[in-house]
Image (cartoon, rainbow, N blue to C red):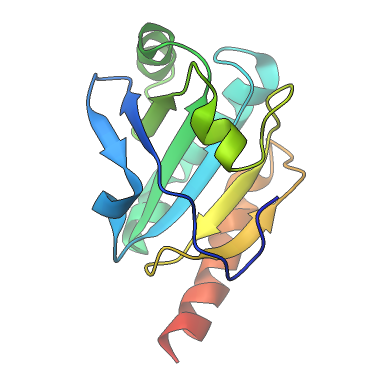
Length: 149
């Protein structure tokens, strides 16, 4: 896992709609960057649907949700459509982003909160799909207060 306070590695990838995303375009926003092994598996689907169900709460606090897995753009498109996912899913078939963020090997289910300055604000080395969205929202609320002081 990357260390809290370090600069988040730059990334660039294509999402489920064929659009390119990179870290710098989210400057001034909080980012939940979450890594998951595979589209449409039980744990990954549960995690994505929990994030979907809480997505308006993320938007209210100026937080962006980005999922990353090695699945193809087409797989992400089917997954996002099937489950009505309103957030970005980046395809990382060569696992470069995954490796840069320490989620490599058998792709680990880990997450990072990245602050508006592009630094790692919180790490989640062990994610429980059913609880992750709520856990992140609680942490974001606390971190945003500390960040603004």
